[in-house]
Length: 108
Length: 117
Image (cartoon, rainbow over all chains, first blue to last red):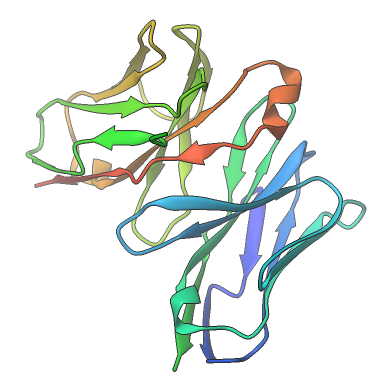
């Protein structure tokens, strides 16, 4: 079983829809990261959080430490949001564990 | 300020060959990690370098080795390539290796796509 589980694996949405991607983890963590990977491979860090909630533009990330669960929300989705979203956790030993990613396609 | 840069971007090798991938960390960063990402999978941790020493290692065979130079840049070497080594290899850098450094944001390079034929 992976240390980090994401759902759904694939997601197709109409432009303008509200999107939620979920992440559950089973290890002790120092921080949780949401990453965005576009075709071609490059990864961009969207959020790093260890408690509560963070917001950046149309993106919102929340984490519940007790439940070992995080969600990434995208409001008013747009075709340019199409990418793979990866949840990762880092522990105090400086090691990262990655989910397998959620492939999001936003249709105009 | 250039972020994490990797070279080459694409590489084709045949089974049994050896390959060297290169990574320059983001300015100010001293810790470099390497990841292997197979198609449709999340990245898998290979190893991490700090102060020119391998500090942590994931579940990869000894065919995978690395090096960090005094300027913090790093190389990943893979010997005796197998078809299953075909993947995107990602380098990431962060400032610090100490206990609290896990809270420092890790920046990723665009990756090197290795195809083994």
